[in-house]
Image (cartoon, rainbow, N blue to C red; front, side):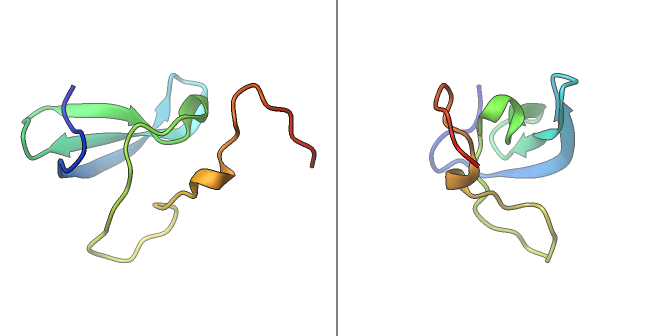
Length: 77
């Protein structure tokens, strides 16, 4: 697997994760690897990569870790 702390990549597409989670993944092109890799960003309640910056204004690109559910923990709404 590519990536890891300090690695730099570019998000090339926002995709569905496992055909169940709409926009729950991203395809990333890492500087250290020529192939596209797919990672979760909300799919299955998990985040595999962390967004750190963007060059242009966009919407929907950020996430807040405290908004993600804790697996196995009941919450009241």
